[in-house]
Length: 213
Length: 323
Image (cartoon, rainbow over all chains, first blue to last red):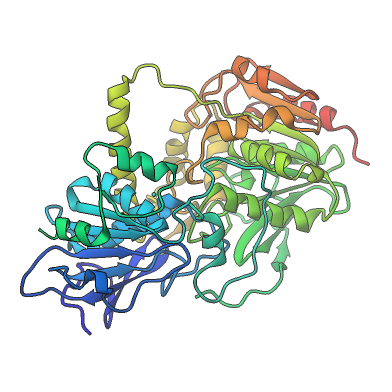
């Protein structure tokens, strides 16, 4: 499989482009290139502790445009940082790097994002932060959806054994934390999102159909 | 992927000499010892003043600072019979620039230093600005590591900006997030702007207008490095002011009242750009039972640099003689 939608920046390795975000190399997997039908790219964001799929998921078969999936920092084929330091904002920066690559730096171009679990939280954030470049964010169930604390707890601090493989255990500890809401389980924050004006609650299939046009 | 990492260990040699490029300032001393620690794979630079065999006392610098900002203050504490130990927080000073930054990561790095300096035994701890806020949280999480806590102008307070209307505040959020993402896109290749010693001192002076120009020159020569096109600050160019990720001031303030160890707050009344904007009277209700706060009139955020004799005397009196 080859990428027919090369980004403007980054090193392309086969069907994977390595994007530079700060000191981290992010793996952007090009699961399917541009089709004759055209259409905007679909970006898949995995859940906490997961990695990108290597093939187009069956639920995205009908998507008319390119399909790509991003490995967040510390996940999949992306860099494992030394000594942790994860924040949801950092992952938002990861997603923004993928957005820049998939739109080839064109501020008029847009993508649609599907996020699982923690990726759903990031999809919501990127939709707000880059509103004109995200044509639909679909939030579905997945690891990390329930979220972590929104403030400090009485838990103390500790170090973890070094990681030589992904997912980075620091990511699992530090990120345990988000417009179509397509999840079955809706914690309080996601219910609040679903209640917002303009947010639709639907299935993944219907949401993809909505945003494909 | 990172290389395999062993247990924590001291890296590199202990050095004691002062490079000839260090700008001399009366009372400022090059650390007696400098070495690196391995903090979960990250190299953290440690600086010590005073007798190696004396009881340890920890000093923690603020955001966008570095341990060498204690070059005058630390020797005065060491003269009281203490082994004064500071370190450069990740991305600051001589420490390594990591991939990620967060408040919790700073805290873990601190534990590496605490564990190396005084494993299993409590110590007096002095923190300035962000360092004071970090240590306030660590003192709440691990009180057994502290005999005393001194917080120098590092008690944050959530102050609302009175001249910004609510609807504008909402717009600011979107603008700030987009601005932050734009900044992140530039971090892979960012470099600090080069200049002469005086140019960098002047830049720093705009944020520290109360500090002496010779002191600012010294900061350049110990907190910067010289390359072919001039001096640059060592601090990670990917960091923005603050540099510790999402964090709210009330997260530190809420921990203050319950601290069990003797607590001394030292606040400067003059507000400065690098300070927290904390009105001293707003802090007083949060002081722990065994705590007190000294408010210094006509002193800014850097209380220990503006008034090193006064503040070091207050600290030494508060923590008592080393035993």
